[in-house]
Image (tube, rainbow, N blue to C red; front, side, top):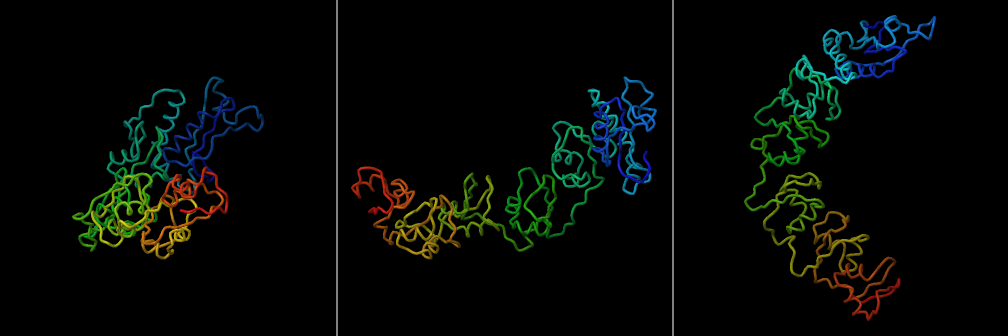
Amino acid sequence: MNPRGGDGAEVIYALRNNNKLANLVLQEIGNAGQNTRLAFQRRLPSNTAKDYYFIHRDTGVNTQPIIVEYGFLDSTGDDVSQLKNNYELYAEAVVKAVMEYLGRPYNNPEGGMTGNTYTVKNGDSLWSIAQKYNTSVAALKRVNNLTTNALRVGQVLKLPTEEVIPPTNENNIVYVVAPNDSLWMIANRYGVTVDAIKQLNNLSTNNLTVGQTLLIPNSSTSGVVPPTTNTENTYTVKNGDSLWSIANRYNTTVDELRRLNNLTSNNLQIGQTLIVPSSTSNSGGTTSNDIIYTVKSGDSLFNIARNYNTTVNELMAYNNLTSNLLSLGQKLRIPRTNQSPTTYTVKSGDSLWSIANRFNTTVDQLKNKNNLTSNALQIGQILTI
């Protein structure tokens, strides 16, 4: 044991040796839960070629003596209580380090569990350990001061003596987060909103941990009615999907999709299941007179409205848009009652292909209409569409 008011373990090794064993010992003591300071050598003041401690000086050149100071008896930190309660764990940690240094197999005397700890084996995860010892991932992370779910084979984890489950009442359901869960999926399952779950559990983000315990508002008593499916179908979100593209596919609006699915944002996850209407009313539906325009790079509502002889406000109202922002690939509905443009002035970067694509025609039709014999264009050239 150490004196003089420090805190944590130290290991002292001989001048003739390297620091590998000392550092392994210090690392394993740290894995067992003790604070660690440093591994170092100490020289004799009267002859600096010699070790300070006789246990280093007088044990022969072919040995690796180390002095392990497990903590400070006069610690101003937590050494005193840790040494009293965990000395067996720290001693076992040294044994483990020595076996690792020698390249010999180490068998935990408790088959993985020593006292109130568990030694991580190949294939372990925080989730599997929590399940095995009837606790939660959150509790394991809390008692071991872990900030991630990453584990290392041989790592020693403290096991929670008890796990406090949040109080429940008739308005709350206790739910344990499973692999692949998301707040959206859980909220949808119980017919509540993501915001309601976050507020009840004091969550500041949407991140979840496998094994985490959540309180879910009971929709039957909280006034939240789960969405019904008697006139609805479901859609599974795929890569590249957006609420806008799905709404357009099913002749509905983004707001309607958000209402049906209790969504508080436009964010989607691949594999997420959405309720979509099986039929739509006349408002927002596509008619046979509509032109479907696909938004391209450089487009704005202003230039699209100008090209199709309409206004930005009319486009926004007809497509249920709440802002002027557009996305590449977004499809806009344009009534055919608005006359198609008759001419177009070529700008820098234009090509017959880009112009044809913009106005839903073909290069050959543009060339025929304008008596062009090649695809070459000039800035300022006026084309008939």
